[in-house]
Length: 190
Image (cartoon, rainbow, N blue to C red):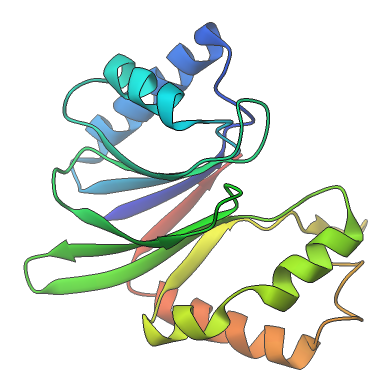
């Protein structure tokens, strides 16, 4: 199985959406594997999602946490019927947890879209994020964390909230995620 993560930057424009769908279909077909897509910043609503899935085609399934037509929204998208079931999501379109069941294999995935432009909002997001629920499900957490890379290009840091959030706790949580992620091939599209 391959999991792709992609911040699509909004799907409201029909031409852009058509190109995104074409890319997803071609990339999925080329893999010859089961594929799930973690999409962030879809700018989706329930009504738009129904329309967009019709454009994508009948074999595609999406589990979503909607934002508005101009912000947020996260999706899990797959062309495998019945592969994913929803576990939980927020009401702002910032995260969704799904359970993948494929024969004997059972794995939880979480797709996050962390707020980008307000340090206080980002800090509160991580402070109130339900880490316990993700640990109980042994969830692999991915998505758009909106982190920045230092000018030297060598380390990735989250500059404005690590000093205010228990950074040791955050590092422990991310170490668990990194260990769990070893069981899948995960690719990020930028």
